[in-house]
Image (tube, rainbow, N blue to C red; front, side):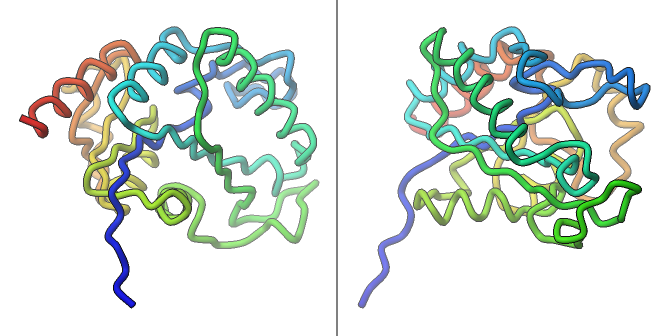
Length: 210
């Protein structure tokens, strides 16, 4: 039986720091992902970005590392509450993702670690497992798709999966280049915010269709 090739395209997008703001954790003294639903705040342009890329015909699949589950600093119930809060804030502005996939693993055991989630896996970015799983579930052509995020691990995961990659950062490209010595870390495009990221995807999509 002949298998039909995938025909859909998607924007895979990071969650923390890309769709929702990072927060300062007093407990750990670092800027981190929100650990409570009430701390979730949208990044400016998050809803507009999702609405815009869906209007171009892309699925939107959120792919996020959540190592707090393995570290014992976040429960799966708390994570679901955070995800529902983010989903609700976006929906209030007319934006909806098609799926959210997360990696609960971390390769090292921590003091409060949960043994079952301490593992070397293929779903923790920079590995491409979450993207590949999203593509499998939705019959996505990765060569016509994007990975968008604010970190080098997002770029690496996207490149390993075969997507176009777009790094959202306020750093100038000359500064970024100092951090791009890692393998597969150079993005195809950079944008200062999600508004600029949407313009890039819109322009590239129009050129590809022309």
